[in-house]
Every structure is written in C-alpha cells, then in structure tokens.
Length: 215
Ligand code: G3P
Image (spheres, protein in one colour):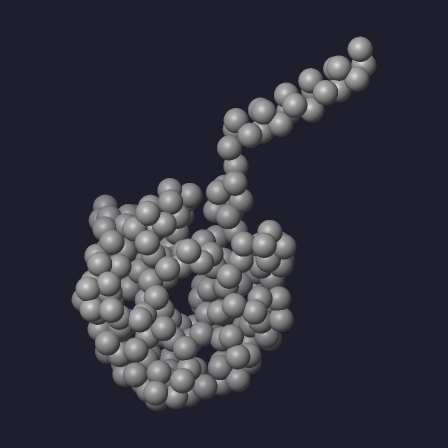
C-alpha cells in the first residue's frame, strides 16, 4: 500500500518525507489556497522534495481548458499527476491526456459508475472521497470496496487512491480492502504510530533503568 500526504504545505511534506513512509503527494485548490507561495512555484518545490507522484489540480471545467492547464502543470516536473474533476468534460480530458502520456487522477469521485468511466477513459488514479460520503451518512468505505472489486473483475489498471481520509481507521479499512494508495492529512500520519501502551511502556523502561542505576 502506498502512502501519499494530502497537503500543499511544504514543511509537512518535508517532515513526512523524513519519516521514510512517503510515496507521493496530493494537493487541491483548497489546500493550495492555505499557502502563501503561488501554486505552480509551490508544486516545483514539492517535486524537489518528493520523487513520487505529486497531484496538481486544474481549475478549468471544459476539455480544452483542462488540457491546456494540464500541459502547463506537467511541465513543472516529470512526477506531476494531473487532477481532473470527474465530470463529462473531465472524462474527455482524461482520454486526451492519457493519449498524450500525461498521468491523471480523477478527483471528486463519489460513485462506482464514475469510477468505471474514469478507468475506461484511462485515468492513472481514481480518488473516491470517503470522508465526505461519511459526512452525509453514506459509507465511503463501501464505495472503495465496490471500486476495488470492479477494477479487479475487469483488470482495470487505474489505481484506487483513497482520499478525504479523516482518521486512522480509514487507513486500516482501506488496507484491508486492498486499495492501492491512501492519501491522508499530516495529522493522520502522526496518529497512525501513536499507541498509549507504547508510551507507557517506554516511560517504564526508562524509569526502571534509571532507578536501578541509582541503586
Ligand atoms: O484528497 C482530497 C481531500 O483533500 C479532500 O479532503 O477532508 O476536504 O474532504 P476533505
């Protein structure tokens, strides 16, 4: 399973990269808006830190505009992946970009039908937004399960990238289903390693040793 970080914050990306578990980065316009550095400049900086896939999202909503923006973004670095919204024009753009050998990430996916279409169009990644489905009392993880099964049934090569992850159990459930990638906020990466028994055990090891040394 690959781990991507879902942020446009360079410090968080650098810190996650140091942990040795970072395989890639996903950004989106809302995440980019939180940063002061202009988006394209920021993407260039991110690509210097991470050699794995870095998703950069287009803002256009028509085929020609999306393709134009994608081609500009793809010039930033070889590992840029273009995030395309899952709408009809986006489907056409995925088809065009795939033919031009530009990697794509179909974003804002909320149904298995959308996932089938983007796979048929040749998307490199499909991003089901599970937290946002959970927010409206629908199981985001059921969608991941359906997509993984469908892609397996037809041997689609599109990788399932679980997005809108909010907590560690999302990561565990995605791993049990066999999703290819999980992208998560920095905070969730930190939560994955925390266990109170580890902290209690460590504290006791250190205090026992110190006590023995005093005696
Ligand atoms: O990867 C998509 C992600 O950025 C959306 O997350 O928490 O805004 O639903 P969220």
